[in-house]
Length: 233
Image (cartoon, rainbow, N blue to C red; front, side, top):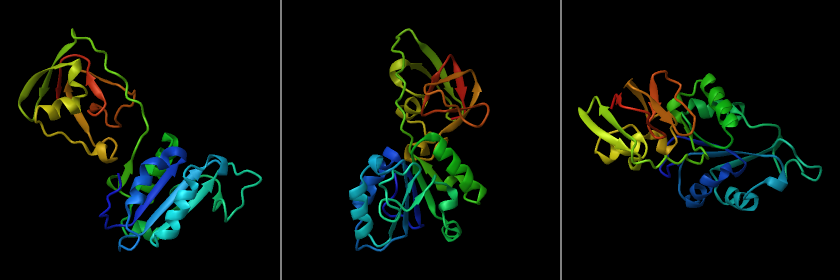
């Protein structure tokens, strides 16, 4: 998710088990290699639910350019500030130093959706462009109804292609890519909604119930045709 060859400062926000996709990134960093600053804001309820606590502390000690800030919103009586955690409360966009924003840091998040939504809004209010914010969302994909009788015509307007979609073809993004049609797919590296594509005619079904913010568009990585459709791809 986070590129190892990053040039700008890297700011990571993780909530609970949302730390998981970042562990491999931190494990892959050469402690002796030069590179940009890395900030990890890690939110947990308390030490009892603090995943990978020991390993992250070891990485923090071995990687000079890594700074870990542990934040507990429900610290236990036995949790010691400055030892178990750095501050109490909730992680937010305000945790980011102004100079990181001025130096065009890149922001990576994984955790509860409300947390990520709030941080994203806060960062953008502070002047961070949306393209500098990346997400990884834990979501179980909804299975497509394996009904061989479902057959819908899909017109790819820009590409001048007309093909028949069936349930075994998967989402519109998978379908288009298998046909060799170039589709926006930055969502696969954490840029949510970057696969948003205009629906010119017809309707789609979003498998996870999450629709794009742009009216008249669809998120091709998670939608299928609900009938014959034409999309701007």
